[in-house]
Every structure is written in C-alpha cells, then in structure tokens.
Amino acid sequence: MIDLETLSATPDAVILQIAAVKFDPFDDYLERGIGIAELPQQNLLVDVDSQSGRNINESTMQWWAQQDPQIQDRVFATQGRVTFADALQQTHRFIWNSSGRIWAQGTSFDISILEHAYRSLDQPYPWLYWQARDSRTLLDLVAVDLPPATHDAVEDCFRQIVGVQQALRRLGVTRFVR
Image (cartoon, rainbow, N blue to C red; front, side):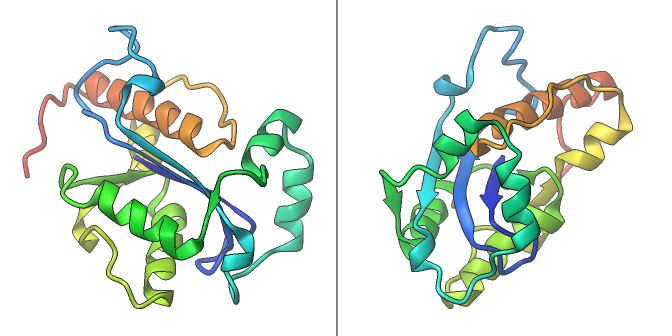
C-alpha cells in the first residue's frame, strides 16, 4: 500500500511524505492483533527544497493549515528529511518485486504523482501499469467502516490495508485469479 502527503493534488505535486507498507490482502491483521509497526514499511519525509519545479498549491496549503496540529508537526517536521531523488530510490528498492500489486487509495492520486516524480528524474518506476490497484473502488463495493484518514501517510496506509482486507473478506475473495 502506498500513500503520499503532498502540497498539491496535481501529478507534479511537491511530496512531503512517502509511505509504503507491505501486506497480505487476505490476512486479518486486526483480528490477529497485528499493528502497523509489525509490518515491513517505509516512511520517508521528503525535502521540499530538493523538488525544484514541482507544484505547491495555495488551496492545499490552506487545507493543511486546518489539519490536526500533531499531524502537521509530524508531516512538516524538518528533521530526518531525505532528498527527492533519494526518496524515490529508496521507494523503488522497497517496492521492487514486492508482491506484483501496488495498492493506493485511488490510482489517480498517489500512483500518478509517483509516476510523474520518477519520470521527472528519468527513472523507471517500480511497477508495471497493470499492477496498480485502487483500494477506494474496492471499499465502495461493500460497507467497510473505517476511521477517517489522519493524513499521516503511514497511518493511512494501515487504515487502507485494513479496509482492503475487510472488503475482500466480505466479498468472499480468498485469492486473486491472476
């Protein structure tokens, strides 16, 4: 599962945070008492100054100003940031050969922003176009009761993972056909 926090909703958005969490869509982590900290994950804060030419949107900045101050402190922290290029390299290594599927809450946001980011540095992205999966569509098929997004990317990954697992279970899906 991939989740981003950004400063715009366009494909060329400045990226604040990239989270990726490896998971088994057919497991039930909540039932087994497994939390996000127990799953293989990457959680990167990306240096804004290293993203020359990428988009910052004023309305997105205003939206961020309305978010939970604790989340703002985490996502906008200045310590521990990595450069844009390094974040993409680390994400590539983390994702490559993961499971054959890349999940995101809507492929037209997180996936398209990352694909644009990789193209902007003339780098391949670590999935093929047919591997992208949309958890939002899956969650729309059944009534899955999830808490609201926090807008901390790693927390939102786990929330979306739990949603995928619950939706597949309610649909009676126990394996992917291909």
